[in-house]
Length: 307
Image 1 (cartoon, helix red, strand yellow):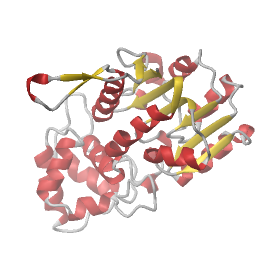
Image 2: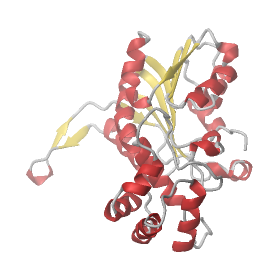
Image 3: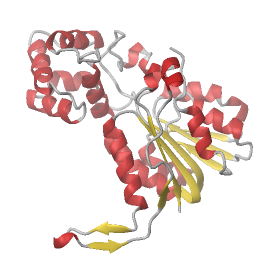
Image 4: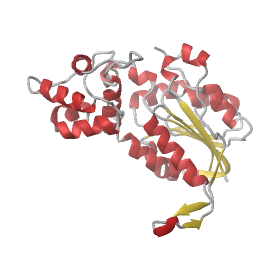
């Protein structure tokens, strides 16, 4: 399946009235969002694209080659945004996009091990240099730790069943491929009423754990807010409730003019708000986009402006 940038028109609309001289794509991927931003904002003098996946950076470099003199592709995780900007001597940014989750390109690469629809090694690392992979979690973690992982990061109703099924299967032989894991989960867990494959939320939980995704988001978003100049725009696309909850809470906290103290009686102290939230409710794909790109169905876009 070719890579399709999710909520592309909505992203462009978010930045339409904002002159963008310096722009950051915190999750560059195949470069689709950055390409569209560059096409619609000829005033851009510098675009920084960050990605930890070498395959993604290589593809994005080709996609963005017409703007080669303006684009800086950075190897790394977006949670190091402050370091990446410091290396480039950038002190203020006009716009930032963060497209969370795994891309269609990565899902379609069997060797990455993200998809239970394709046979590949049980890997799931976005950064191939990091030591922890999904196979290690599946084959070495205790029943209890697996169950908690599936409950908290997968929000899987049958989290205990999933953990027991995996531990039982691995006692006979190691689980090393995506289809091995998908098949044992298919046998051990029921399909839900919407017909979603039983492996869906388990694979999500494993991917989040392998890449420490939620902690990376918690670290990255305050750095993004700090990097924006007054009037700068932050747009974040999330794909499941755990991500969206973090995005919503970080934006709300940054937009509040008071903060609750830890003392008794719910005391509050005044603080200066950093953001104005533009999207009171998240923007979601329309039916046409979902039909063209079913993987977009769970996407939510939240947008805020730096005060």
